[in-house]
Amino acid sequence: MGSQTAITVASPERMNRLGRDLAALLRAGDLVLLSGELGAGKTTLTRGLGEGLGVRGAVTSPTFVIARVHPSLTGGPALVHVDAYRLGGGLDEMEDLDLDVSLPESVIVVEWGEGKVEQLTEDRLEVRIERAIGGTAEDDSDPRRVTVTGLGERWAAVDLSALAVEPA
Image (cartoon, rainbow, N blue to C red; front, top):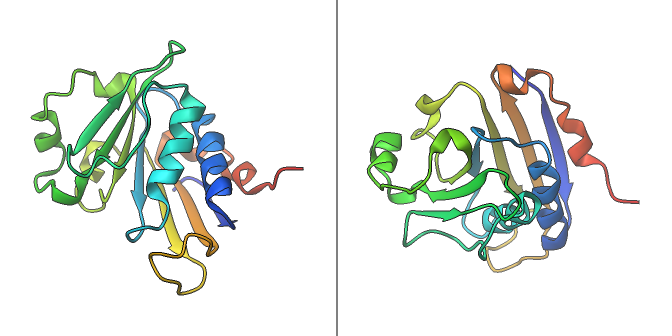
Protein backbone atom coordinates (compact mmCIF):
# COMPACT_ATOMS: atom_id res chain seq x y z
CA MET A 1 0.00 0.00 0.00
CA GLY A 2 1.26 3.47 -0.76
CA SER A 3 0.09 6.64 0.85
CA GLN A 4 -3.34 8.18 0.97
CA THR A 5 -4.65 11.67 1.57
CA ALA A 6 -8.12 13.21 1.68
CA ILE A 7 -8.74 16.73 0.45
CA THR A 8 -11.81 18.91 0.72
CA VAL A 9 -12.20 20.79 -2.54
CA ALA A 10 -14.48 23.81 -2.20
CA SER A 11 -14.66 25.01 -5.81
CA PRO A 12 -13.99 24.08 -9.44
CA GLU A 13 -10.97 26.44 -9.31
CA ARG A 14 -9.52 24.47 -6.40
CA MET A 15 -10.21 21.20 -8.28
CA ASN A 16 -8.27 22.59 -11.24
CA ARG A 17 -5.39 23.56 -8.95
CA LEU A 18 -5.41 20.11 -7.38
CA GLY A 19 -4.94 18.73 -10.90
CA ARG A 20 -1.98 21.06 -11.45
CA ASP A 21 -0.46 20.06 -8.09
CA LEU A 22 -0.97 16.40 -8.95
CA ALA A 23 0.76 16.90 -12.30
CA ALA A 24 3.91 17.91 -10.46
CA LEU A 25 4.06 14.42 -8.94
CA LEU A 26 3.47 12.53 -12.18
CA ARG A 27 5.96 11.12 -14.63
CA ALA A 28 5.86 9.09 -17.82
CA GLY A 29 4.29 5.68 -17.36
CA ASP A 30 2.00 6.76 -14.52
CA LEU A 31 -1.60 5.58 -14.49
CA VAL A 32 -4.23 7.70 -12.76
CA LEU A 33 -7.64 6.15 -12.17
CA LEU A 34 -10.43 8.70 -11.66
CA SER A 35 -13.74 7.72 -10.16
CA GLY A 36 -16.75 9.77 -9.19
CA GLU A 37 -20.30 10.29 -10.35
CA LEU A 38 -21.28 12.33 -13.36
CA GLY A 39 -20.47 15.98 -12.79
CA ALA A 40 -18.24 15.30 -9.80
CA GLY A 41 -15.28 17.15 -11.31
CA LYS A 42 -13.21 14.47 -13.06
CA THR A 43 -12.72 16.50 -16.23
CA THR A 44 -11.98 19.69 -14.25
CA LEU A 45 -9.28 17.81 -12.36
CA THR A 46 -7.88 16.40 -15.61
CA ARG A 47 -7.89 19.88 -17.18
CA GLY A 48 -5.67 21.05 -14.31
CA LEU A 49 -3.45 18.02 -14.84
CA GLY A 50 -3.07 18.93 -18.50
CA GLU A 51 -2.15 22.50 -17.58
CA GLY A 52 0.37 21.25 -15.05
CA LEU A 53 1.91 18.87 -17.59
CA GLY A 54 2.03 21.61 -20.21
CA VAL A 55 0.14 19.68 -22.88
CA ARG A 56 -1.47 20.91 -26.06
CA GLY A 57 -5.20 21.10 -26.61
CA ALA A 58 -8.21 21.82 -24.46
CA VAL A 59 -8.93 18.96 -22.09
CA THR A 60 -12.58 18.03 -22.46
CA SER A 61 -14.40 14.85 -21.55
CA PRO A 62 -13.40 12.15 -24.08
CA THR A 63 -16.77 10.42 -23.82
CA PHE A 64 -17.39 10.18 -27.55
CA VAL A 65 -13.85 9.48 -28.71
CA ILE A 66 -13.01 7.14 -25.79
CA ALA A 67 -9.42 8.41 -25.70
CA ARG A 68 -7.76 11.70 -26.51
CA VAL A 69 -4.02 12.33 -26.70
CA HIS A 70 -2.61 15.69 -25.63
CA PRO A 71 1.05 15.96 -26.70
CA SER A 72 3.43 17.83 -24.43
CA LEU A 73 4.51 21.32 -25.42
CA THR A 74 7.45 21.16 -23.01
CA GLY A 75 9.14 17.87 -23.87
CA GLY A 76 7.39 16.08 -21.02
CA PRO A 77 5.05 13.09 -21.24
CA ALA A 78 1.89 13.25 -23.33
CA LEU A 79 -1.41 13.11 -21.48
CA VAL A 80 -3.67 10.28 -22.62
CA HIS A 81 -7.18 11.00 -21.34
CA VAL A 82 -9.42 7.94 -21.52
CA ASP A 83 -13.11 7.53 -20.82
CA ALA A 84 -13.51 3.83 -20.08
CA TYR A 85 -17.26 4.06 -19.52
CA ARG A 86 -17.95 2.15 -22.74
CA LEU A 87 -14.73 0.12 -22.78
CA GLY A 88 -15.64 -3.44 -22.01
CA GLY A 89 -12.36 -5.28 -22.34
CA GLY A 90 -10.04 -3.02 -20.44
CA LEU A 91 -6.64 -2.19 -21.80
CA ASP A 92 -6.50 -4.72 -24.63
CA GLU A 93 -9.36 -2.80 -26.13
CA MET A 94 -7.53 0.45 -25.43
CA GLU A 95 -4.45 -0.83 -27.26
CA ASP A 96 -6.79 -1.50 -30.20
CA LEU A 97 -7.70 2.18 -30.24
CA ASP A 98 -4.41 2.63 -32.04
CA LEU A 99 -3.35 5.66 -30.07
CA ASP A 100 -0.34 7.21 -31.76
CA VAL A 101 1.53 7.24 -28.50
CA SER A 102 3.51 4.84 -26.37
CA LEU A 103 1.63 4.28 -23.13
CA PRO A 104 4.85 3.82 -21.06
CA GLU A 105 5.99 7.26 -22.19
CA SER A 106 2.72 8.96 -21.31
CA VAL A 107 0.66 9.89 -18.29
CA ILE A 108 -2.61 8.00 -18.61
CA VAL A 109 -5.72 9.33 -16.91
CA VAL A 110 -8.70 6.98 -17.02
CA GLU A 111 -12.21 8.05 -16.07
CA TRP A 112 -14.63 5.25 -15.17
CA GLY A 113 -11.73 2.80 -15.18
CA GLU A 114 -12.49 0.87 -12.01
CA GLY A 115 -12.58 -2.85 -12.63
CA LYS A 116 -11.23 -2.37 -16.15
CA VAL A 117 -7.64 -1.17 -16.11
CA GLU A 118 -6.14 -2.31 -12.81
CA GLN A 119 -4.43 -5.24 -14.52
CA LEU A 120 -2.29 -2.75 -16.44
CA THR A 121 -0.01 -2.06 -13.50
CA GLU A 122 0.23 -2.49 -9.75
CA ASP A 123 1.55 1.06 -9.54
CA ARG A 124 -1.27 3.51 -9.90
CA LEU A 125 -2.84 6.55 -8.37
CA GLU A 126 -6.52 6.24 -7.55
CA VAL A 127 -8.46 9.47 -7.25
CA ARG A 128 -12.02 9.24 -5.93
CA ILE A 129 -14.19 12.35 -6.07
CA GLU A 130 -17.33 12.47 -3.96
CA ARG A 131 -19.75 15.22 -3.08
CA ALA A 132 -19.14 16.28 0.49
CA ILE A 133 -22.84 16.97 0.86
CA GLY A 134 -25.46 15.12 -1.16
CA GLY A 135 -25.92 17.79 -3.84
CA THR A 136 -27.22 17.44 -7.37
CA ALA A 137 -25.16 16.93 -10.51
CA GLU A 138 -26.03 20.44 -11.65
CA ASP A 139 -24.59 22.09 -8.55
CA ASP A 140 -20.96 22.85 -9.24
CA SER A 141 -20.45 24.86 -6.08
CA ASP A 142 -20.79 21.97 -3.63
CA PRO A 143 -17.59 21.02 -1.88
CA ARG A 144 -16.08 17.72 -2.98
CA ARG A 145 -14.14 15.21 -0.98
CA VAL A 146 -11.21 13.92 -3.00
CA THR A 147 -9.34 10.84 -1.80
CA VAL A 148 -5.99 10.25 -3.48
CA THR A 149 -4.44 6.81 -2.95
CA GLY A 150 -1.04 5.79 -4.27
CA LEU A 151 -0.71 2.04 -4.86
CA GLY A 152 2.40 0.02 -5.55
CA GLU A 153 6.10 0.65 -5.22
CA ARG A 154 6.04 3.76 -7.42
CA TRP A 155 3.92 5.63 -4.85
CA ALA A 156 5.25 4.10 -1.62
CA ALA A 157 7.64 6.98 -0.91
CA VAL A 158 5.56 9.80 -2.39
CA ASP A 159 4.07 12.18 0.17
CA LEU A 160 0.58 12.92 -1.09
CA SER A 161 -0.35 15.05 1.93
CA ALA A 162 1.14 18.13 0.24
CA LEU A 163 -1.88 18.02 -2.11
CA ALA A 164 -4.14 18.95 0.81
CA VAL A 165 -2.24 22.14 1.66
CA GLU A 166 -4.33 25.23 0.97
CA PRO A 167 -2.65 28.07 -0.93
CA ALA A 168 -1.43 30.96 1.18
